[in-house]
Image 1 (cartoon, rainbow, N blue to C red):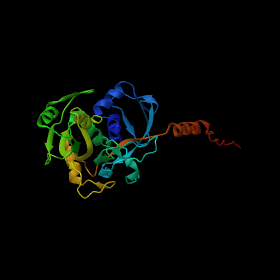
Image 2: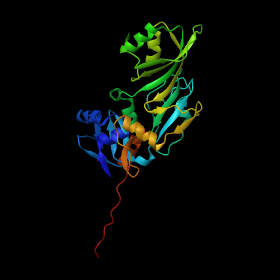
Image 3: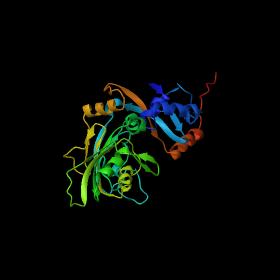
Image 4: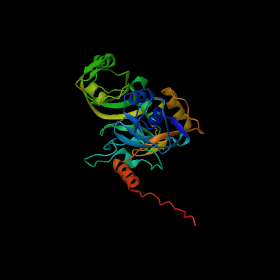
Length: 287
């Protein structure tokens, strides 16, 4: 089995095929130690170097691709490791026999709710790419009195330090005139850092609770407890793929992806090969 390099790298979650084609053309990808060229194919156990990082090509069954919904609680971070030794969402996920979980976007430590994770690198990249304009919906508890002119500014656009930002939609829950806290549902199509909190802060208001309740067509399951996960159904995965313009998975199809290889292991393998003594050849002596 052999596949084009850009497809293998896309399956790994390193970027879109078009972006990876540019990497190959720019000389950032090597195949078995040699600069790769566009259209070149790789097979199982081939070695890849991508922007200085080492990978090995392995089989990737499409039928084994999974997407799970995780109900992230407060206090967990969405990176794989943390120098402060705080708990990460990956500590609570099921173990995989092969491959790895890829987080679809991030939630900061003080945000809870729906986090999608998948073993499908191409799907993860497509769901996060700004060009796809995938909706993210949040329930927000705002501390302070919210007026209609404020909401109008948040809909039309507010200049933040990284550019213009706005809510696609903002809907108020029932408000109590004497209450200091009120709930809203907001929809954005970007994944900018602390975008929702900064938008409310631009109006002199503070967010006291932020919960992601929807990502694209997938809703946070009502009975999914915090710190728990649930596999998405085949129909939900198909809806996700269609939302980003990907074809439904063929359960009988298989492909290739690349897994990271530690440079130390790569050097050991090379050293072992260099030090290997040649086999003695038996010489037949004519009588």
